[in-house]
Length: 190
Image (cartoon, rainbow, N blue to C red):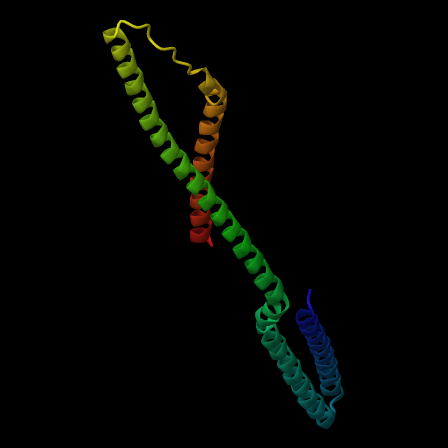
């Protein structure tokens, strides 16, 4: 535990000890009362009865004190565990920010990839149109069609790598939405 809970536990243990001590003394005083009544000593019986009532009252007071101390337990636990809680929240917020930043970075890269893909479509269309015009011009001039060397694109057109990247992006998107749903479910459950 922590120092606040430990101190509270010591106080509670002391109150339990005093409660039991007074309860035992009250039982002893009641036994003495019975013995005095049996012996016919009414003065001693009266004194024993008063002592038993006094000790019962003290035992009840210690019981009430135990209840009051137990009511302080959440506050003592809050004091002991508060710093660890605040540190855990700080770390959580930092990690969540790092996660959000990383997802934003990935989203930015995906956006750039989409823009690049759009530009690539435009370049492919433009290159195809240029090839058609060159072929038409060659045909009109009765010249051989020019050679088209698109082999240099093979180095960047690794379809397996592209498919792996697509799968990874789908996994990231699925994982991200699962994380959001899990976090919302945990927040609702708490």
